[in-house]
Image (cartoon, rainbow, N blue to C red; front, side, top):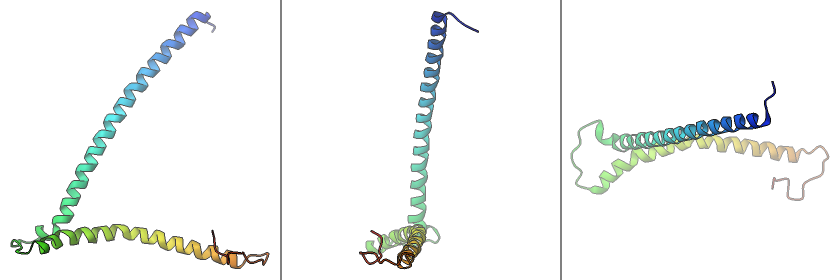
Length: 124
């Protein structure tokens, strides 16, 4: 089906305008969703932090500490344990990198052409 060029141009402009309006509405909706998700994430992180920091105080009734440093220790200890526990997954990454480095060194040491590398066979 063929249209007159003026009618075809008008139709294309209408479609373009409609498409642009729809895209702008969707962009606005995505920004609202991003804000809501960000706020919910911050709220959840705050709650998680409070649960972790207060776990020394929530399980059993405790008397107020006469020593504020002991109170700080009780607050900081579970946070430290949490951070160490969370970063333990990074140790596995480090272990895998060490394995890859060992394989790399083995490949350089067992180079089939037999020529040693000028830098001692280490990757640069």
